[in-house]
Amino acid sequence: MDEPFGALDAQTRERLQEELVGIWKRTGTTIIFITHDIEEAVFLGQRVAVMSSRPGAIRKVIDIRLDRSAAGEEDIRAGQAFAAYRHQVWSLLRDRHSQTGHAGRVGQTREVASVA
Image (cartoon, rainbow, N blue to C red; front, top):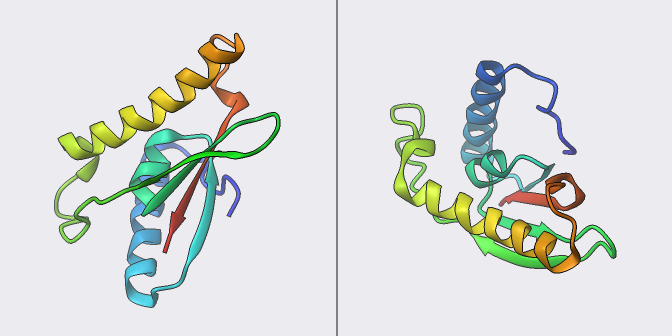
């Protein structure tokens, strides 16, 4: 899935993200989800691959180990573990820009969330 929730308002996007996690839990189907949204990647992914833009290559794969058992009852996005994963991805993107001199353009790298 390539940016399927990108054009939605925030509430609809979050509701559909939660629905997608529910479908994944019920079916166990592997989903490859491409997004530029770090929070979306961390929320949906079990693994987040941070990619470089040119040449397009996976820089690092981060295993996301969030407890999703209470999803729907509590917001895992508000937890410390979520914030730490988000920061880890952001730091990788930021490091890439400081190394190449592309300050300010986060859209030049992509995150891939794989829900498996």
